[in-house]
Length: 143
Image (spheres, one colour):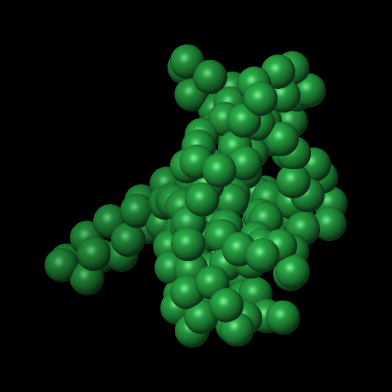
């Protein structure tokens, strides 16, 4: 009976799970990471960008736990402090040039009216979230 209860609780946890995004920096200098994900709540429905996570060489860091069951698409951008190396090649989304940020409607042009906001190119990623899948998405940056 205990085994059945554990399995049922595990299925419930995984099927309503939240996937974390793990970023590994295999580059030779620190990188700064931003994530964009779809948020579907009672108060907001749309794309949100968040950043900046600093990931030092050799480190793996959780850069968000945004992805819920059924929301398996996210975007990721990373760059070195010097911008010598940049990662992102699919969509231009809004970010704050300097400070930590959370920008709702990051895919809409009107958010660029703030002078601290610009767009960077993000790469589209997919993760499966479900019973047979892990609860993490992994991204490795190298230069």
